[in-house]
Image 1 (tube, rainbow, N blue to C red):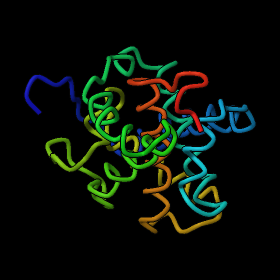
Image 2: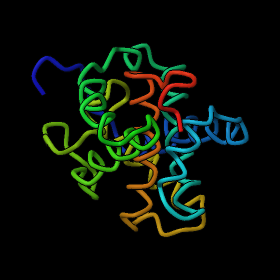
Image 3: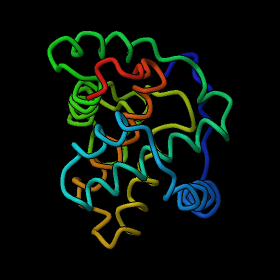
Amino acid sequence: MEGSALISVRTQVVLDTLIGSIAHAVAGKAGEPLAAPLEQALAMAGDERRQMLARAGYLTRAVELAQFERAREPMPWLAEQLDARAIEAGSWSEAAAALATELVEAEPSERPEPGDHRAVSWKVPGPGGHVRHYLALRAASDGGGDPQDPEGKRSWLTGFLVHCIAEAAPPVAGVGSG
């Protein structure tokens, strides 16, 4: 990726340190209540297990924002894409869930490479697609599922993207939040 700040690291070091510390921070936030439009968007991820993974992805993005300055860079492209769907969807929650699902469908199930145009996990500012891939696998494993099941990663990434969408275009209280 031209002009990026990518560095080469050993996978085991990332798994042992960064992934573990972020996963621990996410676990500490697991019971925190979310605003109704956010809860509604996450509920659209599917059954209870998928909703739990989506919530873990959502909370992971909150941890990224707290830990990585680069993660706080704006994402106007998400706001633009949400605006295009909001009129059709009728609510922020439906539009955000639909956009997140659409973006997730393009994401490779395997560990994405930085130059892979399909990998939204690399388009979001922060620690990068490899870190997010391993966090999704860990969340799926912690949830009692198979970490290699692509549905687990998709559910986690859906929640992650709902947070990103809320950063770019927050739901407005009382307007389209149903």
